[in-house]
Amino acid sequence: MVDEHITPVIFRKYGKRESNAVIALFPAECWSSDGYTCSCYVHVGQHGEADPFRVINTTKPAKPEEYADLKAELEAEPYGYRFRVYARYQRRWTQERREQMRKAS
Image (cartoon, rainbow, N blue to C red):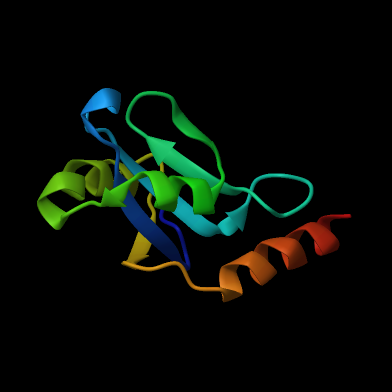
């Protein structure tokens, strides 16, 4: 199944303490009922919830060669994502998540 729309993604890398794990943040995809947290994905644990501001403040940007395998995994079946990779958080995503929750209520 191929994702029909382009999904914004931010790849970040944790430090040595967290085994240099790379996380894919989906800042425009709402996870919680208040619209604050977003969806994320890591190799171990897979899809989950993330506070995008906390993740950004406690990680560093992942380089393309560091996130290449995670990106390839998410673009392949069964996920089929199509990405636009961003280096910085866009303020509009917070509003988009809140709007998603309003429509879902």
